[in-house]
Length: 350
Ligand SMILES: [Zn+2]
Ligand SMILES: [Zn+2]
Image (cartoon, rainbow, N blue to C red):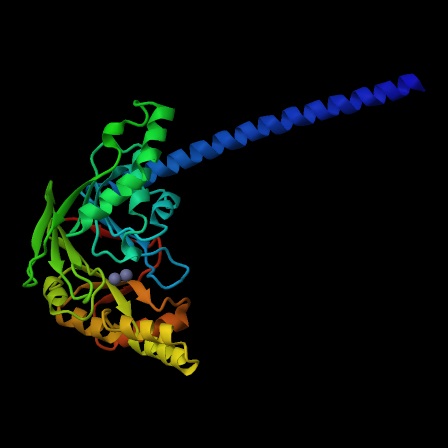
């Protein structure tokens, strides 16, 4: 009886050890295959985006300050092997990693203005690009105020930089490449554009937009090998934006359906919520309405209009059609793309 019990005990322990060994072997295989898979995807995505035969736009964030399912505003443009990022709203650093974008390759960030939905993640982008292996300088371009903004982030990340290099060593986290430098510029007040970046045939212009009372506020135009892309930043209907968008291949623009926001304003007024009533009224003054944007794009002969920073944020075919597609397509006859986070647009080059 005792011998039987001992034998059964022995087999139980043996079974347990075999199970632990099997599970640990399969965990090893699982982890190794996940690491291989993710490394392969990242290098394939990087190879594709840094391909010099095309320009790729990635809508890294299509949201606004109002709560939505989208990451706040940001657009990545991959051109001639360069990774340029326009605006850096909240959540975009992690979103870019989830999209497997080559974050360590970011060489320049362009900020349109100093509403936080356009820069909240700038500190993370400067830091994560370095942690992930950036071994070149990062320049943050922006109108007057950009140096103070970047210096504020650099100061608040001082200990983070110190800890990383101390822990992993100079070879892995070279302090030479931590942080970022700035290029602060003043846009021309007459609405004409100004070159603020020029490298290997890629030119980025900045121009003044009308986001009053927010000043300075700029839009950007990227040109390479005869292709042109305008990024509106935040703006009300603006002759400057129309002029700068004339004949462009892509206009990536903010948009608001003002009749919907007026309804929201009225709803708050009806329940005597003075604070939100006032905010909903004010924001209609410095954004561009869907119909105004459709007219602007039509008059400027924009080839493709891409919507981002949509206020209100809507989901699904029926709402999107009623709130953005219909009013715009009533007046604009070019191609219309309703943006969403992660949307990729490829522009083949001649
Ligand atoms: Zn905004
Ligand atoms: Zn704004």
